Length: 184
Image (tube, rainbow, N blue to C red):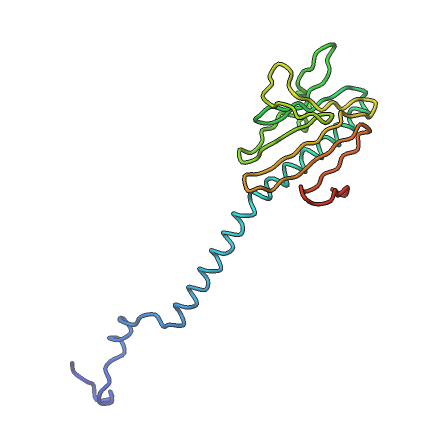
């Protein structure tokens, strides 16, 4: 290679070395640090997703039952929350038969997320959610009374919430294993 008159001896033109230049150790460490942070946040968010889904569904059922109690008293109609293995829906007493509530978007039929499990005890007796002839129902009466129940909603990771309803219509929701918290 030919040197120009201004190039000091032993040095070569810059353009030849800039094309072959690699990453410095510092640049590689910064990239690895950024990738580590992103992976950490992704794993935390995936782990909290199942827990958040469980909490959201427990709070939804709690809120819907509370609202159903108020609606039942205000409108003077009998309601019930009916369960099946896949989810739940609200039914209302029409003459002598229980029919699904259709005119209200809040009380529509809902499916449980596939990773959640539900167990229900009515008046202290565990019920079978697969009973299609006599589906389990929590009755919400226009007098403000409610079927006493204990509903446990859990996920595959072992976390669970317990919703308790008393005859007087009082509802309490708590994370299973913690003291009942009436501020939900």
